[in-house]
Image (cartoon, rainbow, N blue to C red; front, side, top):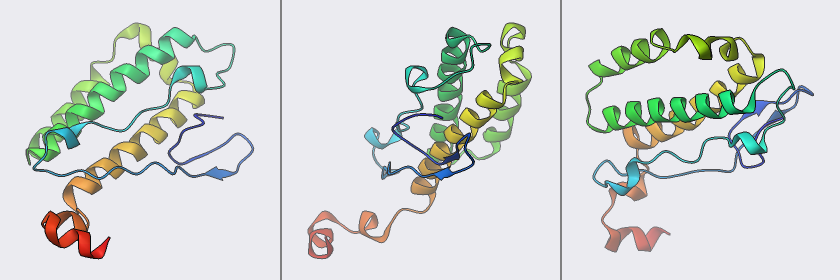
Length: 141
């Protein structure tokens, strides 16, 4: 039902599909602050009643919101996360509200949340090899 590229979700047939997308983040690296790709509206099978342009706009808005949360976690400003969540959902423009009532968009949010969760997990709980200096990590790779 969703992207050919990833994350985990339950398709319309009821089967769980799993992503192969993994990205390691280093809190010390500015390059590691970007979220992996979110679903592209062109890769989605949207119902005819759901305007593609509004779904695309929502995904862009939600990705920006998730990137902001990830950046906040990387800076260890955990107290700000709640205010960002409230600001995003309570500040949703009225013309976007009908899109949020769609089960398809709800499922897209679930996919995006899974991507964000994996990114945050990578920041907060880096793997053992990521924590090792490069000269030692090569021995275990």
